[in-house]
Amino acid sequence: DTAVSQTPKYLVTQMGNDKSIKCEQNLGHDTMYWYKQDSKKFLKIMFSYNNKELIINETVPNRFSPKSPDKAHLNLHINSLELGDSAVYFCASSQLHPPGWDRWEAEAFFGQGTRLTVV
Amino acid sequence: KQEVTQIPAALSVPEGENLVLNCSFTDSAIYNLQWFRQDPGKGLTSLLLIQSSQREQTSGRLNASLDKSSGRSTLYIAASQPGDSATYLCAVAPYDQKLVFGQGTRLTINP
Image 1 (cartoon, helix red, strand yellow):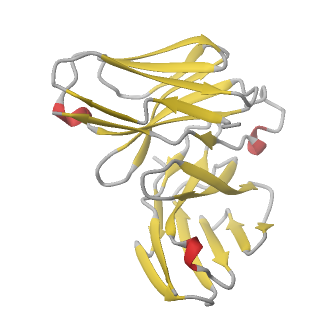
Image 2: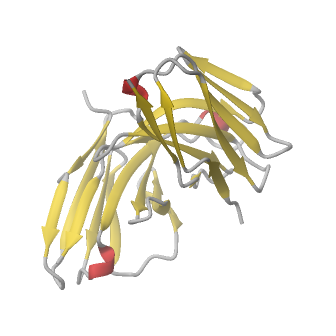
């Protein structure tokens, strides 16, 4: 069984469209993330949810809206797609314990990525 | 602001050689450091996680070390094989777990 799965794997769409990427993890983790890998291969965090609550929101255009219906799912919705949104988007999950627990053991697991191409 | 640098950016070696990949980070206030492998068109596979209190971790032919005070980690690959060809990414985790990645080392093992 795939631990962190994303759909779709490839997404080609026109400028101005709205699209969603879905992510599911079956590891029982309480925290999920979205990362973006640009054309230069740099991975940068976009969002993080802990138990369905947004805890990290980097400087990302508000056209990007994450939604977490439950702690096993974190979807990414993108409105009014632009050419510059073309990238590979990765979902990840980890188990963060409350302060005082073994947060340093929080190993992150990544999905296979969604390659978004905006034309 | 945490910055992670990986050297070299690319490395090509003949099969069977032992090799070392380097990772350096600017802020030593980290909780752990993870090494990942990324194959073309695929996701990231976690290879090793070193807690901030640890000095090294081993998994098979892989050995990762961590010197937090100097802001350095190395990934040692023994007896390299063509299947080891991939991009290797180092990432450090601060308290909030916003992983900060290096740009990666693209490794090619020649048969």
